Image (cartoon, rainbow, N blue to C red):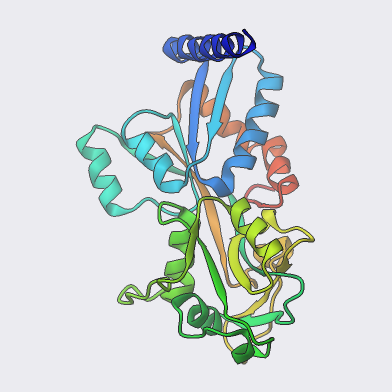
Length: 285
């Protein structure tokens, strides 16, 4: 009976959300970047606290998933940790969707290892060699003898795309560098954090908001002659940290109605304070 009651409750909730969504005026669906999902949920919770007649649903799945949902008109706002691709813009146009980009925060991508790993500093070149599989053992980098375990986000993740383009391919459009075939593609930043916490030979990357005492953030330098910089908010603001990026919202055309109210809230002082509290960097002071 308990099981039947639970199923009935779930179905009722789904029906209620469907009715809400059908009304259009008071329901907004936000979907996309896993890096941004905690930020999006924090915005939604505070916004709904201030506007109890409005309802916002926030889910992750990756930047590509969010943009696909926007293009297919199954969400109102897409969260993305990368810029929309030309082929996505083309597909959107064919479906009558006009993606409109709003920069809402900045993020530094942290490269992390297990706290037991003695390696604490790496250049962008060394990182590229690790993640493409050219460097395979920690002793090659001054660490202990152990095969490097490469962790990456899945290919539909904006974090994956950004890291590949800016670290592996070194911002060279002609480069075809790819992650090593041995790289483990994980479904979320939290999955990478958990694996690094339990594996002394693992290395991964994610938004710096996920850093905890269970992982050690690597100091990164542009090259051997440059300063090694920690992934911290001040270093992202100053531009000193070499692996940083904008966090974006995409809407169908310029925001209007409830969508505009939500975007305006994200860019308000209160919304940008939430950006800071979730370990990202505000774009509006």
